[in-house]
Image (cartoon, rainbow, N blue to C red; front, side, top):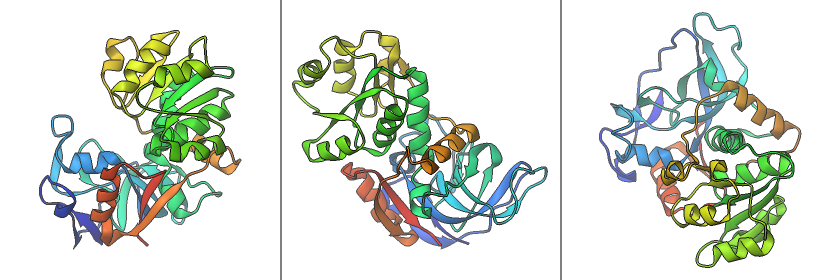
Length: 307
């Protein structure tokens, strides 16, 4: 199979297109013919070695955890899927090695769900990691109908999902973003505010009594602002700043969940969740996809079209 590989830690320049053996399919796994692979900031952070203390890397690495595709084969004791089924997955393994930037990937059935019918292959590939992160953040923050919640970096990959999911739960969403993204956030049902100096005052102008919960995708000053605005600091959840734990909130890392992914697919099919794809590049341009992701200016997702 064709795959993007890296032989050592580094930046986009270490990525090359190569031929690799087809993956083995273990019990409880399916082999997926990859249609599209989502690109996430964690991909290039892992590739650069920033998370080496946390996750084992087995070189040569094939990056990527997000996938949409068609089941090509099933492993022993797999009854949930058949050859030809269309699926999406957060195909994270216990170590970094055989990822989704490839024509084929093996994924555990606990990490995949049926592809949403309402989404094309590229949109579907942008759903798993960021969608699951947002969904689980809202659960940790106990977001419910009637809450007022601030989503920090609401126009980003995770923030876009968090905003839509909170609105779907009946919450009032105040989203931080640059001014160029304010109209976009209004389309999602949020009330936009500009991040930076004066953020606390701008949020208080909209919510004088404070906020019920905060979902943080950026860290730094967002944590400081949330501390001043929250009625209950236990409802602060961050994927970007461990200081949330020190304040009594939660610093979290997304977990694979077939059930959560199936719910996201359902929400997409009933029109309550959209996936915004900023850029689609061919597999061989994975290095450029990483460069774009590193710039941090994309609205929504970057996706690699594989087949």
